[in-house]
Image (cartoon, rainbow, N blue to C red; front, side, top):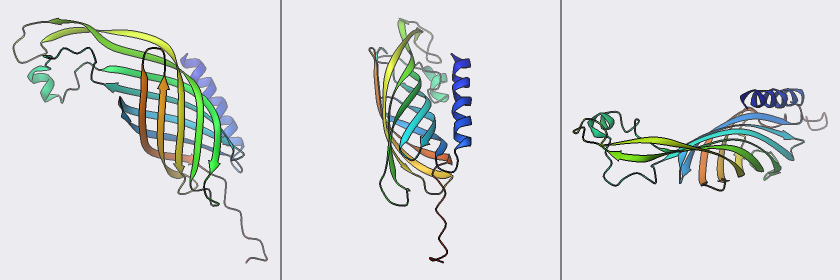
Length: 206
């Protein structure tokens, strides 16, 4: 799976670098907030300012739905800000394609909407067993259950390529599979070749 991902990444990179004058090729990084929280990293290629192709990874977590009401991380967990606590985890590696609509003549605001499929890994703690370890550590033991599935990924991003190489993005996202659904809003940065060069003025205009 990892080898195929890198091969696809290399293929997309080659296409993007070969088409820098008319097309866009860039990466985005967003922080997601929704029924899970996490991060999203993507590569986008826009052909002829109309058609979009995307390869991405998202990793999101939330408080476990199965967590007992009296679960405690103990003093040690509290000092570590809860980072040792178990979480419901929703990971997705995905690819998609879609359409781009420019919302102004300068091309500095656009909608980049894609639909795709993803390989999804779900990890959720279960088999909670109470223990008596005082107040220093957790009062339950648990173990992760892992599920693999396929998700439908919908992402109508609103992009703001402020300059040719840097911009901002607002990314509503829905990832749906037979076991879970992630609905969130991402806010982040875009870096790369975001749009074609501005057309130089003709001699008559100068």
